Amino acid sequence: MSESRLPPGQYVPGPREALHYGPVPRFRPQRWDLRVYGATDSLGEYRWSWSEFDELPRVDAVSDFHCVTRFTIPGVRWRGVRASHMVELAPPHPTVTHVMVWAEYGYSANLRMDDFLAPDVLLATHRDGVRLTPEHGFPVRLVVPHLYGWKSVKWVRAIEYMTRDRRGFWEERGYHNLADPWSEQRYSYQEKPGQGPPLL
Image (cartoon, rainbow, N blue to C red; front, side, top):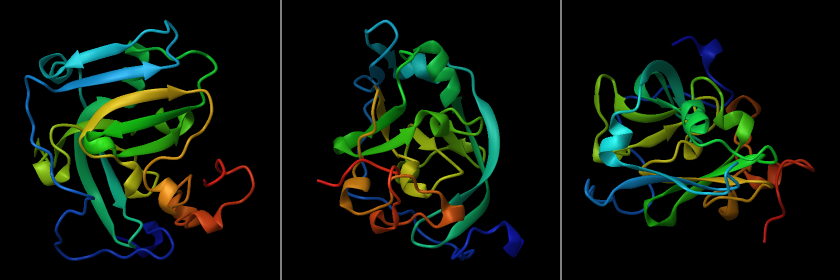
């Protein structure tokens, strides 16, 4: 990988284990669902069972993965459902500006709607041609290649439409609200006015 493709402060590591917070959840297909709720255009909630979600059309995308701990994994091959397709299936109200992506055990990450709708943002089910492993987010993880990896939520269970920004799990604990690796937006103390809601 060319050094010119690396965001500032990043390096390409050797083989490494997946990083995650907390235990790896057990997948129970009969209980699993994906919900879209909050400020939907209909004011109602949308829901897909595992079999319904697994039948949605998928696309392939190759992108680099940038971790806030300073490593970059180049050229990861993902397959999944475009986030923009989910928004087409579950339209937001015109006043929606952000989403909160929720995972097992209450983990969450907030995103601007423009970031969520980027063409290479996926709800991924496969990595490098095979189903995700449990450690990498099976059955579904979000992939947001243009932001630091903590925004790429593993074990996704819900998408909440929001009409104003709200900090997610790591954003409440000192990580930057926006997470652009090319600007090294790693920590909340780096935030400029308007880049995030107040820390409580």
